[in-house]
Image 1 (tube, helix red, strand yellow):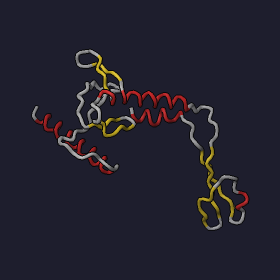
Image 2 (cartoon, rainbow, N blue to C red; image 1 turned 90 degrees about the vertical axis):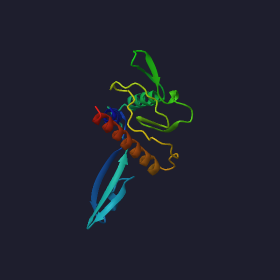
Image 3 (tube, one colour; image 1 turned 180 degrees about the vertical axis):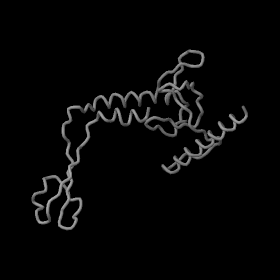
Image 4 (cartoon, one colour; image 1 turned 135 degrees about the vertical axis):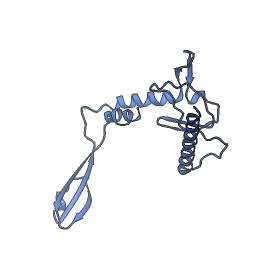
Length: 165
């Protein structure tokens, strides 16, 4: 699902094109306006220019629509519970102050919400648990360390549970 969003939907967005060219040393006046010299290799000057060109197949509004819907679903959406009833899930349905981080396709929280998971696109999948109280991450490294510890602990618990079956 993540790859579809990043590459498929992201492909609708307009992106700049990079043009690279070369001229002989001493012919720098032939370098197009707005280009920058990338390297000088012997007698050759290599330049690069970034331009926005209108791509008729680009639809940034489509990409924006999909991304905004995905972000809105992180805040609040509903899924069928085990009993068939709608269960509301998302950041707005967590206790105040329990959110550590919100990423493109993930919520990091200090509580385990136990939302239903059926394996359907859009279902929240539990990917890690930190079993003990810890200080809030202050840096990206702290955050990723906690993420790694949480994933390792959950995997340990799942392996132990499957070994007991």
